[in-house]
Amino acid sequence: MPPSVSIAEFIAGFRRALFTTWHDLPPWELTKQSATIVRSLLGDLSPSEYFIADEIAVHRSATVESGSVLKGPIIVGADGFIAAGAYLRGGVWLAEQCIVGPGAELKSAFVFSGTKLAHFNFVGDSILGDDVNLEAGSIVCNYRNERPSKEIRVRVGAAVFGTGVEKFGSLIGDGSRIGANAVVAPGALLRRGTVVGRGISIDQETLA
Image 1 (cartoon, rainbow, N blue to C red):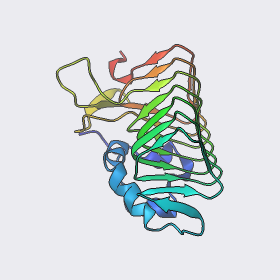
Image 2 (cartoon, rainbow, N blue to C red):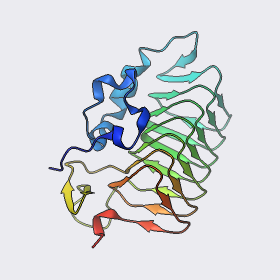
Image 3 (cartoon, one colour):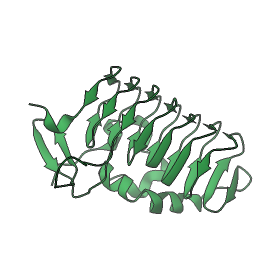
């Protein structure tokens, strides 16, 4: 098993009251339980602040365009924007001022304030910090299709460790930038301020 990976080292705002119960989970366990966690958080929301129906809560200041698809449990925070053609599913939590653009798919993910998926993105089983920007067409993969063993492995320092889960995308630190058409392979742990260039593939598991 991998050593402890503290989400708070990547995302300054992670240690907030609503996540108290799950502070000590490694990121791949947090995303594995995303639907259960978001469902629990739904119970703490006020109907005076959120439109709530069918396990979907949308802050009254947020905009969800016609033609988007939201499958609960989902929480969309204040001043958020979900564009037509966006697809959210599998337990999704969005903090304030997040944008999910047209053609973007977000699955089993926690997304912190001011983060933007521009358009035509896929982000699966991941945690994105504050002020992360994904340019058009960038992908955060969550599954190892290319090999018999599907267990996701992560690199911590010089060593690679198994996580015990078959789906995990990435933990992306505050202020990171993912360029257009870039691909982040499963299991990536990207520190705060990471910049991934346009058209680049990042696979930390295979680093020499």
